[in-house]
Length: 138
Image 1 (cartoon, rainbow, N blue to C red):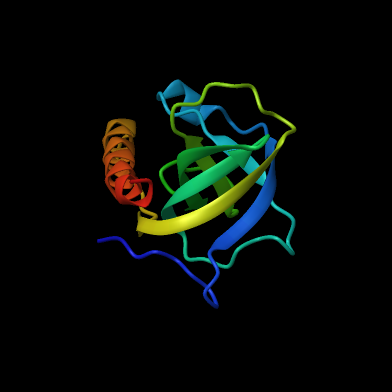
Image 2 (cartoon, helix red, strand yellow; image 1 turned 90 degrees about the horizontal axis):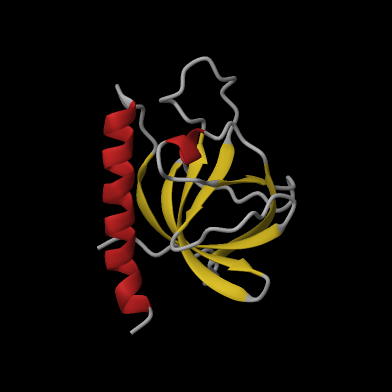
């Protein structure tokens, strides 16, 4: 079972503005919302993949978020990014604010030898997240 994250008995929640990224997720079938997070809002969490609840304009969505440096994509300056793939969502939200509620840890960030391996792992991450989400909403 995946670990539910709590800090001082409160879940980790933060806000971020959706900014343009490199569009890599879109080209591999997983468009992500890249978030600009103010330093005072930035959660201190290990790099990795998390199951999250995303709030946008009063509506709640499930998602899978990566916090990390995107090690599969060489040549980028290694800065920590916050990218969330929102499940069952297809809207243009650039410039919009999202609230992210980090619910559970899925896995550590890792580099992949190919885009195909990354895509397969993303599918696995989504499957694991959906298994964890089910009990939360029953």
